[in-house]
Length: 470
Image (cartoon, rainbow, N blue to C red; front, side, top):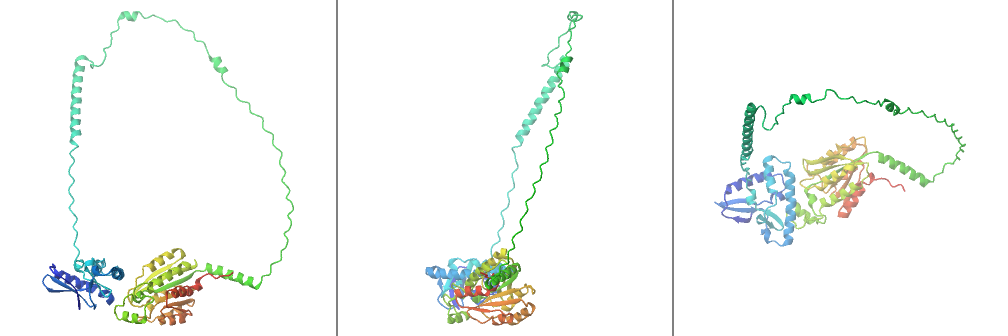
């Protein structure tokens, strides 16, 4: 074992050892390359902890690396942490808690590199996260400003009561309120001075004037004369159209007319296409990697630059998105992503106006484990209609490694779907898809570089494109 670092005056080393045991259990499904990312803690004496790694070579702290090597370490580390987050989303609660904790980017003081391979001495990041207790809520003080209006109201009521008592006592003694005038007494002399009778004033009648002002009823106007009817115009006789002899088409014009009929009929009929995308970890290899470098990589021996861009998965993603954007509107598209054995995901078939959902799924693919072609092919075939024309396009860089039999699955699909065709994009010429294409009358397109992947994937879906008639 290769010692990475030594720390002294460390508190509660037993907790770190217990948490590392849980981490080992959570990392057991991952490839060896990912589990070796985290150094192994050992306690040689009380308060001292040492970190070891099975990766051979001289460990160098991240802060001491040149800028170019730091960028390479960060690039590889981000890919690994993203893979851990992807798996953590579908993991049990106990393992998920520690996977979520370690998938965060570590502090630079705990990060080392051995021959370009990142190594993390977790330290404090491995401890159990503390439980945050919310602060107590202070009671709201009672309001005191409401007493002043109450006191003023009581004073006003006392004033009104005093004024009412005073007015009542004054009225009992004087027979009226102080602000009312006293009525004057009327004498007999005043009454006798009133004349016994008054002269009558004659009233002239205005009735004749009122009757004269009433207007007379209006005289009804004489009805307007009825106009004479306008005679309808007599239509002019229409000349019979000249008879045109039908045009005799040439052989070329006949073929163009027949092509347009086929094209229109094809556009009216819906066609289903399932894309089976191999997301095994070998798709992380650089497109320009040598056979010798690939052999060392498969034996878990670090090879500088073997996982740098352009990777197989990146080139396959770009080519797939270009083809999906160019397919005719009558083609429905679905996606099956084979991450690992018993880890195959399905994105249901969508119409042309919803293809962005499939493209977003392709953008999120991160290679993970072994090659599960048989399981991915079977899941794709289960979503196709046996009565319709359909196609499965398989993108893979290797043979089946999950104990499945993709050849047998292809033969069974050919019997159940007589109108099905399977085309295979064989990255780097692994020869894994010949039996799939042969069983359904499809084709194998070998692609050994970036340009060939784009060209071959477009050729594999050419039958789905609209026919050129001109």
